[in-house]
Image 1: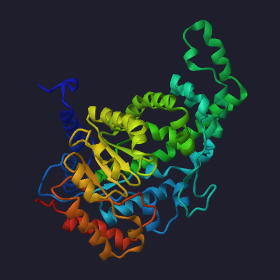
Image 2 (image 1 turned 120 degrees about the vertical axis):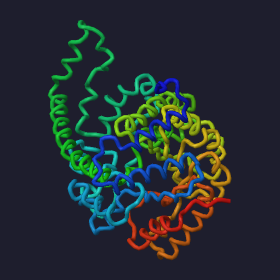
Image 3 (image 1 turned 135 degrees about the horizontal axis):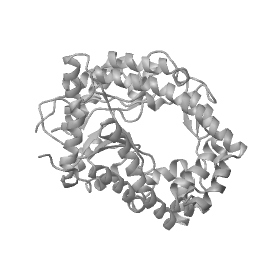
Image 4 (image 1 turned 45 degrees about the vertical axis):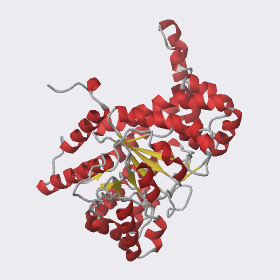
Length: 447
């Protein structure tokens, strides 16, 4: 008799999700070779996550945003305005380089959608910066310090009537709505419905219908690509996404300067806000795996690196809520993939607080030998070929760096080969060197 989910250990839940993913249910593989490749790639990742010493090789996962675009002579601006071209380039990349895992083209996003939203949080190529550049976040205080209480009291209401109108021109009129929690029964229904009839709100609703139409059209290209990629045996490197609560506040609500000031001026409210956001970030992270069956949840870490805050501040403000998000995902059998941007050398001891064999930590500028020594028996580690070397180095240099990482960080398993940060550009010869050398040389070393 199959064990009920509530009675399973976290190990059993992880195994259940991985086995479901590995089964390839509802995937019509193009042939037995594609099915075998799909199963081998997922098994390879599973063994790395679970720190198994197996006679297979190190997985290779080139991490990127616009990199395939520039590889094939296109520009970010072109593919942000042409969904067909976007996915055709991704198809070429998979066929030519055959990585173990890929990043979805959905990460690029669609320029016309952003335009229709009047999206102000980013500048993007082909719109307000030249087409050859990647997009850029515009950091501002989109939440004022006096609004912490409103966020804590009702995050969804704050998002709907305060935050979204500030970052999307098309939904600016939503600030005129009354709080939806006021709709409790018939006598008080009228005022809320009346606000829906306001001319500016009517225009917003009409505009959002058009946004939805464009999104469905663009999403059709993405979904068709994902289906075909899986049928050919390729594996998406992430099934879900979430963020550290501190980064939710510091990236696009309070901004870097604002949240740094809050550490000193509003520490209690900052802490309460992160506690309020924590279950929401767990829920966000679980959404993708529940839909896709892929249990890997990507979490980019932006403001917890060495030098961004003291160790005491990391311990007090950054780590507790992030740890709860990680544990919440692990509790549900998912595998957090944490991209530790910058250096995490002083943060490594904290990682030992997490259960063994349930996470992937992708490191940027962290000492990989030290990471292996400190947390190699606790968590799978990944990284950290410098993108600068991919762009300016030679294939021989890349092979040397890969060998050093495989012999060091890959010792006894628990390692994934990837670059130090997300690539927007690469050279074919050095990218091939990273992928092909790892496949040829990257058998797990045993001591």
